[in-house]
Amino acid sequence: MRRIQKINGNQNSVKFRTRFFQLAFLFSIPISSVNGFIFPHLSIARTIIRPNSINQQTCPIELQSLVDEMLPDLPSYANRVIQRQDRNRRDTYVLLAKQLDELEPLPFNVNLENPDDTNLIYLTTLERQHDRNQILRFQQFHWVFLRKTASGWELENIFSKSNSYPRYGLYSLPGDSSKSAIAQAIRLWLRDCHAG
Image (cartoon, rainbow, N blue to C red; front, side, top):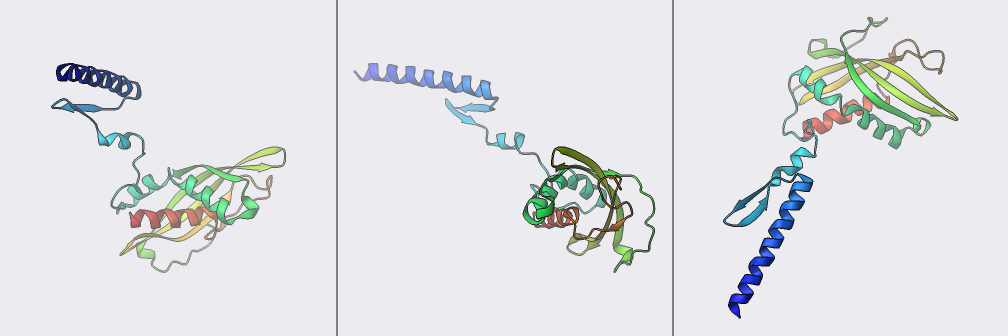
């Protein structure tokens, strides 16, 4: 009787292994076997979660590395800011953020607290706005002043303009946008980056 139970147990074990290997193959789960025991690899989450600065332990010190890591996350940060804070712009979405090599010089002097520790980068964002029965698409240009401090990088100031004036009633000349959704998104991203 014990012999039969052992054989039946082995058959159930074989069926389980066969089914598990079929599922592992179907879902591309890496597996390994040690002494007849099957273990799925615990590193599968790394193939699902996109590695970015928020998942890393340290925030980049070098400015270009910091900007490269921030840009993919900036639209989602900005969209969350818009949804939470700006009731007048909840139908506006930031689609893409990209770094530019250069922009025209600002037509005014910028007063900086620590100009020696401050760097200027140029960004552009593509945005979409739903207005009644039409969809408006426009591009914003940003002069972003980032200051290096003992605790990491922080936003010193930001100026922005739109390329769509006067069509959509947006500003055509650079203006202070330090309270805009993009400015707040940059601050939040830097906070999260340094906290990671």
